[in-house]
Image 1 (cartoon, rainbow, N blue to C red):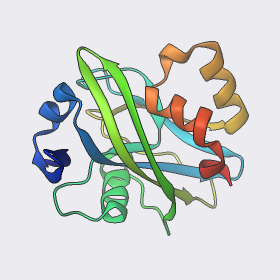
Image 2: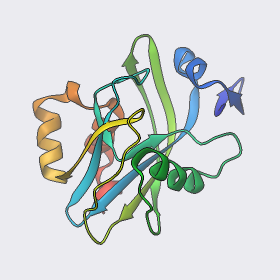
Image 3: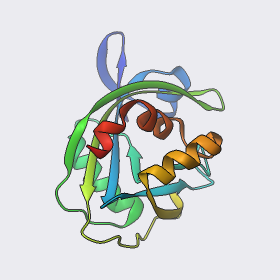
Image 4: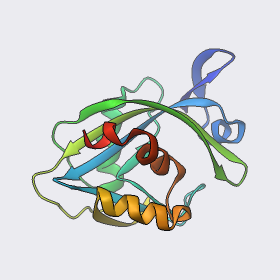
Length: 168
């Protein structure tokens, strides 16, 4: 169950139902960085939306009652097999995007970043992540401009409208 707004109040709702109804809900995004590069992940082919698309290091929903920073740290470990040092809260972003298959992401996202001293190789959970790679911010923007359909909508939104939050 994830925290979603229904009838004007926050309450636990099943994840797929949230996306079918396009309910506004809480989310967390994490950018794992090393100098001018950021870690991106290719979503596993079995994901129920945007399978095979590239995303930032970690995108998830906190469990009911879970603090966003705790969720961010937990999911980076679960999805990527990484332990990160201090997380820096970068801000909050709200967006709404069609993610295909009749599903809508309408998220209020707490964005975090973690700076790594060296570009480590993740050990991703294959049910979550099929591939990872390090990329410069400029190269990422170039790839998104050339083939936006290869990237999840939220990453495109973050870079187009909120890059200062991510790299500032």
